[in-house]
Image (cartoon, rainbow over all chains, first blue to last red; front, side, top):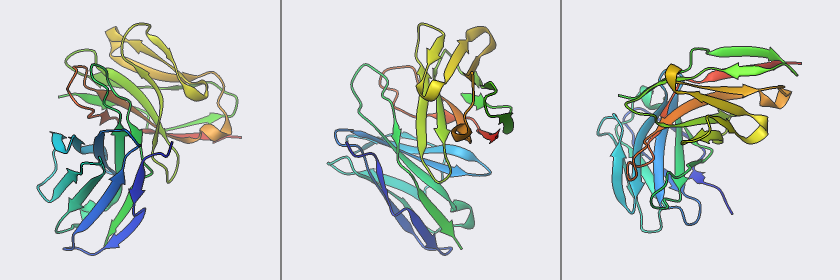
Length: 115
Length: 116
């Protein structure tokens, strides 16, 4: 079974631009979470989607948004990019069987550089 | 709010030596606890998890961790380190209530270097 896929793997943008990152979960997985990883702040939770609905949200400004499609694929968007948005963005998917915690499987990440 | 502390930013051990990485958490109740490993340029791989029951849990690659409620700790151990274990290790906590979602709170990570 294929793992979590994130595209693109690397991205370079300039300040003020916007960017869209994509995540394809493992087949059959219905929950997708996004994390930002930076040297200064570490791994921080952005948001989680389940059945096309945002279920949890981290403490990030409104410039960060996401969505999930009916096939569970997810995208996150960052508008008006700032230098501090340079980071590795990780996506994780889980099966979401009811009544039990669901192990999250992480993708390789998208490395975003803002110049 | 929940938090996770990994007091050691860097650790260097010799190949074949034992390893212990420390993790302390702050949470309203006993959370779900995890250890992840990240190799350079890679995503996170789950090493092991603790939900309940036996406080000593076994994971992949020969790792184990012990949950100590009285110390709010979940330290990761390996009896004999291999050069391929060099990576960054993250401790994390997750929600314990059904329907709480899958949000993980991570520690700042411990970078492990293995000397040959």
